[in-house]
Amino acid sequence: MSSSRIITLTSSDKVDFYVNEAVAFQSQTIKDVIGDGCEDKGTLLPNVTSEILSKVIEYCNMHVEAGKLEERSGVDEELKAWDAEFVKVDLDTLFDLIQAANYLNIKGLLDLTCLTVADLIRGKTPDEIRKTFNIEYQFTPEEEEELRRENQWASE
Amino acid sequence: MQNDDICMDVFSRLPIETLLGLKRVCKRWHGILSDRSFVQGLLQRPEPLVGFFFQERYQWAGEDIRTISFIPARMEDTQPIKQTIFSFLPEDVVVLGSCNGLVCCRSVFPSPSPYIIVCNPSNKQWTRLQGTRPDKESSYGLAFNPSQSDTNFKVVRVSQARTDMDDDDSYLSFEIYSSQAGAGAWKKSKEVCQCNDNLVKNKGVFAGGKLQWLTDRDRILSFDVENELSWLISSPFPTSHFTAIPEMCIGESSGGRLHYIMISEDGLHVWALEDYYDSNWSLVHTATLEALEEENSQLLRNTRERVSQRVSIDSLPWMDPLAFKDGLLLMRVSTKMMLYCIETKKMKELCNVSELGRNCIFGPLVIPYSPSLAPLMT
Image (cartoon, rainbow over all chains, first blue to last red; front, side, top):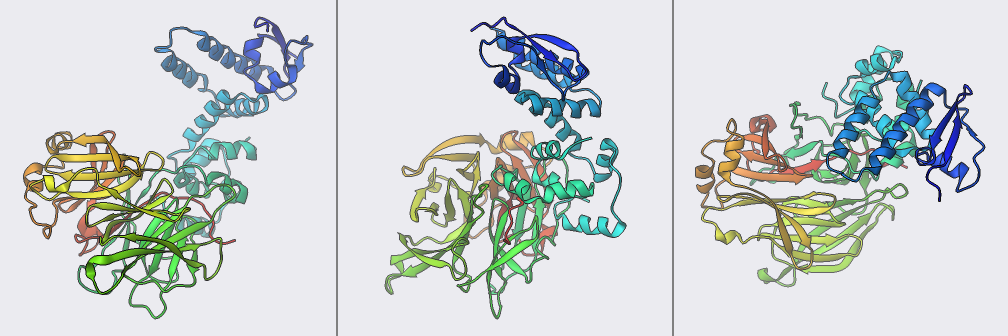
């Protein structure tokens, strides 16, 4: 079971990325497709651009490295801090990362990115949410009033 | 932009309280949040406590008090009391119990045709249970443990009966209503429990698959709903040990574990039930009255003196634990309702008792509530 095999991943815009097997296998999808030991002829990822793929690989790299460390104390906090910085990106990139994490089946990245969006929603009024996510206001004042009354637990 | 799958994944990480507000953002989100399979997927998720229902009772008069207050339980900010939560029901009710988002109640008395109603205040659905006229003396408990495929609930009615005219020989009998069985579905259980106690506080706490009531002889009546077995659990600490009379309550926390809270001259103690049949409790939290006062000096003064003054069971406790869920205790301290977080030992003033009505000092019904989107209509 070689752990130093290099896997080739090709983004939708035809850029090749060479990654360690351990890093590539953070994606359950890639792990399932490539399998054990057989020669890798390169994998095309038609749903992921090079910009996003490079970020995904950055995430997987960091988490593989962190997993290797013998000395565990402080690693978890550092990793959390790194993750927090990693997701400080614009909203479109964040959604692209969610899509990629979903397609590539990378649980940690999917959890991290979805939680980040959830945190952007939590505690905001509907108006603030519409602004954040660039959503058009669609309801009539009557509809808005009806919806407001429907929710028993709202603070306003 | 986001597709529906991403939306659903993100939404599934937010509490129900937040999700209900998101329906107002746009039509697409409203659609996703109303989708039946999405709602079903959320049912098994444990929901945080959002507040307590509070309904006063007259000490002597036969009629019921109609006002039900909802006290939001938030440590970070203060939200106002709401008193119209149940206005979607066809009649005024008395709240009997709540479990995983559903609430069980009965028509207020006097009533020409009283009913037991099970409802969900989060989606305003309700259903009347056919088959038995509710009475004021019996105790009721609601058992609801939803899964993706099973949204059935059970209501248990506990009644006291005497074997003959001898007052000391009374026992408790149980009837069970199952929503699965359909109309007229009350079934008398073969199980009985030799017990003279009155079920006084914390009606029908559902923990670990069992409905539990605190009795006036400081025991806990437990009823295993699936297996129809009753059991009497002893309290973790003899109350006779104290000079001043302590006050207790029970509640569920830490995923289905029954907890027992006692406030006495020795302080605030919380036990968790370890072994059901041996009445084996472990002390999980303790704080002396002095420590509570030091941590919350703005809210508490002369605590020990006031708690120690209660030497008669007829006098009202100055500090009264009312209901407990998920690490949060609602208690009355003098004329204020406080929320106490056992993890941080911090107390928060929620409201004044006068906001809840004029009679609330004596034995009110206090029921913790966590919302759910569980449907009641098929």
